[in-house]
Image 1 (spheres, rainbow, N blue to C red):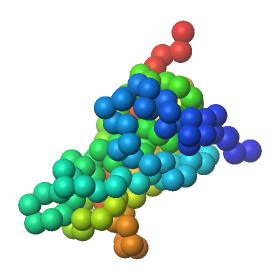
Image 2 (cartoon, rainbow, N blue to C red):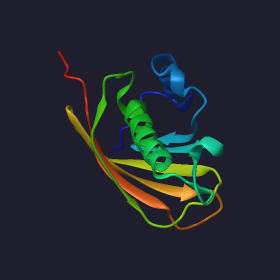
Image 3 (cartoon, helix red, strand yellow):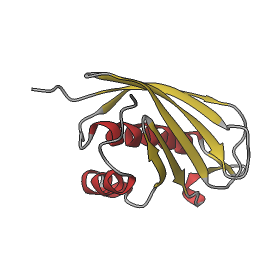
Image 4 (tube, rainbow, N blue to C red):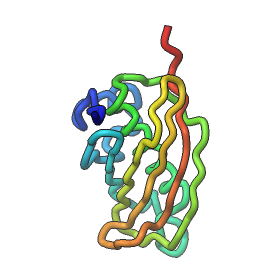
Length: 141
């Protein structure tokens, strides 16, 4: 039996706006499903590096947030879930278009969550980056 999310995409977005107001409007949650989340990062000038491509730090942020949103969907309002590892492989130059990040949770443990994220440039089939990582969940008392 597949575990279903405990929060909707709208509930995750509202919670993130509450606990990280500085990120409000940075990402759009396009889909939230069991152990998965797809977000969109509308690309603006601040995301670009010289040469007009999306910067590595912007892609890294999108990967980290997609992973976090997938986790929140599955476990609920856990603001103190924190990134413990995140490794990213840049696969090709991302053009200056919206970034789509597709996160997948591979293991949802009580204290550690492991997953990966594929990042795409809008309209391009092949991924521009792939990230793997883990999150530590707040200790349950």
